[in-house]
Amino acid sequence: MEKREFLKAGALLTAGALVAPSVLFGNSTAEAAPTGILADKGPHTLPKLPYAYEALEPHIDKQTMELHHKAHHQAYVDNLNAAVLKTPMEKITLDVFFKNITKYKPEIRNNAGGHYNHTFFWETLNPAASIPMGGIDAAIKKKFLTLDAFKAAFNKEAMNVFGSGWVWLCVNKANKDVFIVSTPNQDNPLMEIPGTVKGVPIIALDVWEHAYYLKHQNKRKDYIAAFWNLVDWNKAEQRFQEATASKTK
Image (tube, rainbow, N blue to C red; front, side, top):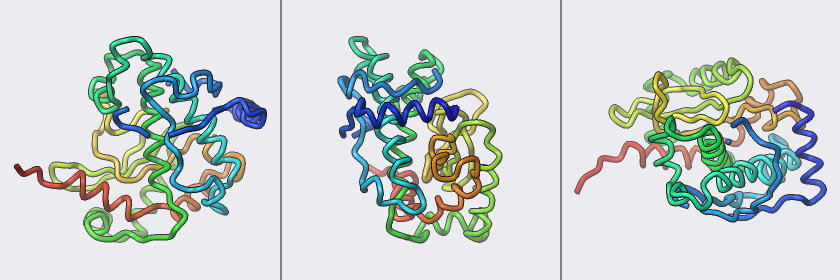
């Protein structure tokens, strides 16, 4: 997102033009201006954050969190609802969209991705410090040898994202190996896109400028460093265990 558009989003928020509410996986073209026109009138809703807007300070500031959640994420929800409302797509869940993503119009791909990615990102963050443990810790050390080496590889991937996108730590369900991958715009590793690497997301970092520009300006490196103070490794372990659990009857 360009700086001028980001400031415009802030003006809309200040004017009280947006509405925020609540949950995901059952029930974006490039990111549209955040209008809040539908205010969750549809099958998809804006999830409530699991912490206060100021809870992630000093690593992520309150104003950025308010804009990011109540403006940007709300816009993805509104635009997705507008695209599916009163159509057969109204009953389609995000995971089904992702399995057939190339069959849908860009507004479905971009806004469904934006909704899922941001919901996943909010749950990746936690103001309470934690460290990797259990299966995810073992998997990271198996692949990268040390936590510091993993972070260095993840940071490099995040710095190398050109323009807007995401960086993910994923697991391959078949062999339980973890890997780092980046996706452009609002794509994610669950999407069935020819020629891309698929996996189950464990943690994610939003590297769109709107995620950090107010506090860090153009210093993406500082934002990436701040991110490691907020990763919820307990949630990461839960996701890893769910992704790699053997399905037995």
